Length: 458
Image 1 (cartoon, rainbow, N blue to C red):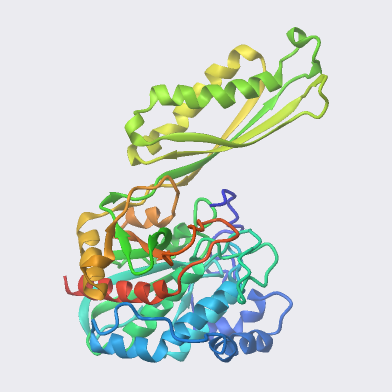
Image 2 (tube, helix red, strand yellow; image 1 turned 180 degrees about the vertical axis):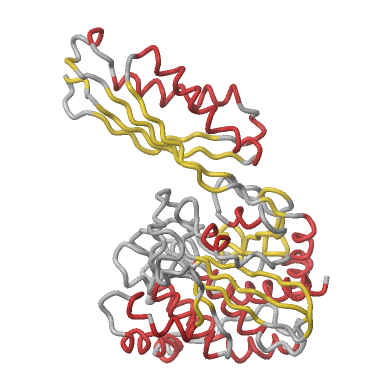
């Protein structure tokens, strides 16, 4: 996860100054504003031409590991459209977009959902959207969420549909998440009986702190939602399996940036100045150790430094330096207390050394804490979709995920979608070589559809 907040203008300033959401039809009128220096017609042509270009690249339909498990309309939809699901993912994979710049991805989703007779509504921030599948009778509103942004990495997979964008790649599986949600939406739109409403949330900017989930919440998209569910690719689980966990499944993640200042001086006379490099070293080794003695070790609280910069010459004490790192904890209550504690401990380390310091503690995302009933619904949905052997338990990770913001407002659950082919070494998330087994896409569609149906009827 990148740790720069790149949200830019306040929500509502782009593209609509009144902060309102727009329909697909209203959005199309202003599309030239969203895709800089490209006429509307060119963009629409690019999006509309996706199916023929990318469907032809799908040599054969991947096996549907849940085929025949029903319901019949879902089996029929997947049988007729599994090649399109693969094509969607390959299109998205080849055209990644970074956080808060997901304009063509948004356009593609609007186009595909509109073709199915649905009415997507773009978020006020200009990228991302929601789309409701209205039921045949009254009932609860269940949200299914996917993140749509890519990472600032250069892909090194060598796939024929590798990223065509320099410095951007879907190395965290968000192309798969988006595809699964799109497939679930299209399939649910064919359901003959839907007792309630399913709201699809295609969220931008998961890869930046504090996350695009806050934009979704600010838009009111969760105001009438009863439960929310999401999936994330996991290369440590085999394709055909889905991992769940009650309680925390990810960790809170914050960014620390410490800037030190000193008068500087000659390294032969450190006693006549403030030795800034020594101060940096004291914090690098001392702050994690102090935290380990002030925070319960059972909370999984970890401070790890990622970068340090100071000075150029070996015989000159520098005048400034910067130290950055991430602070993670598996416990929600501990997360709330960490900021003042870190400031206190950093001050105690630095005050005897005479350096000036400025500590920026940038709050990131809370841990994702899965609610028990929602997780049981998801487990039942996995079993119904794929059989008992498809469900797996999964441990809590130290990674961050802004889905946690949603679960502070409504109950829900976040699961891990197995994407490993079962052969070869595991290619991990956030690596330029990350790949996935495309059988997992249909597994994801079935899981999300069954979970939504069970939740509507619970």
